[in-house]
Structures are given as structure tokens and as C-alpha cells.
Image 1 (cartoon, helix red, strand yellow):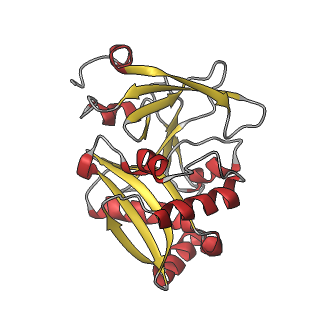
Image 2 (cartoon, rainbow, N blue to C red):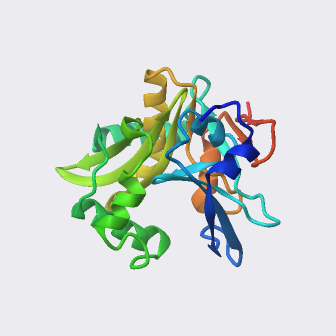
Length: 247
């Protein structure tokens, strides 16, 4: 599909449907997600990322909630990012504690059980999500990017302690999802995952890391603003806003 097509044309041609339900991030809010078929996307995926689209298995989606624009696109320019004091501590502790491996994504009972423990710990959700390997496969393994989707593993003392899925797209890396063993929460593995991807993007000569949506009123999502400088914009906006750490 040509990158010269307008966003409206792309959405019209690849529209799959909407999913509606309670918002996962803001209490007492209803959410609506617009889904596109990801298979014909190709090089257009990079452009759609700037329009608020994220990958979910073989599809792309973006928030399409009436009267709400809290989900902002956030990206971190790799060349200008600088760790703060806390991030340097997380980085050094993570390097000492974890053996990091980047591999082809695969489903396994071990990973699925780890994911369920993470849901219990982080989101108080369990049976309704990823209850079997087929669900795990469709969410974390299936991708229209083939080798462009990779799995980052954190190992500690011979045990799998964290799993992150990320995409390589043109000049950027996109963090799709990360989950971890609750026992290693004190090491801030989620923050370490982002720092590792930033370092990987730098080594690969990429310009940006997209860590996912920024939602200012949601603690689970607003920590991403700590990675500075960063750039943000709401879906539909054309200009990026720059956020710099105070001098």
C-alpha cells in the first residue's frame, strides 16, 4: 500500500471494525478502538504510528473515543535522550541482574503463565485475558511484520523474569507490550525494558522509540513522560510538542 494515500483512504480501505467497552486506563470511561487489517499495511505502518496507531497481532488499532483525546502519541528521539539519576540506577541494576536475549517470538505455557501472574499483580485481571496459548499466540506472536517483530527476554538465575515484544519499523522501534515476574518488580523491569530498547535503537542507528500511549491521568501510562526529551501529540494533530527536562 502506498504511503501517498491519505489517512481517510487507508482507514476506509482497511477498516475491520470497532471494539467498545470500559476504558482500561481511566475509571468510569467508555473506550472505543478502531481496528484496521494489518496485512496489507507494509510501509504505511510507520506513518500510521504518528497518527496514533498501535499494533495488536495482525491488526492495527487507535483510540476512537467520543469526546476524549487523553491517549497521546509519545516518541523519544534517540539521539537526544539522556538518562536522569533514577534511570541510571535502574539501568545499572538491570544490567547486573538480568541476562537479556532478543529472539523470535514464540508461544509457550511458561510465558503464558508468567503473563497471567503479571496481570494478577499489575492489573488485578486474570481469567478474562490470555487464558490459553491460542490467545497468547494471537496477541504476542502473530505479526504482519515477520522478522520485524522480536521478543526481548529478561532472564535471572536461569529463570524467565520478563518478556517484551517490540517492532522494528523503518527509522524507529515500537514497544508493543512488556510483562514481568512480580518477584522482580523492585528492579523496575518495565523501565529497564524501555532503556534497553533506547540503547538498542541507538546501536541500530534509528531515530525514535515509541513506548506506547501517554495518558497523563493514568499512573500506569504517564511514567513514559520521564524519558526526556520526548515529543507528544494527540491523534489528529499535525505538530509535535517538545517536552524537555528543566535545566
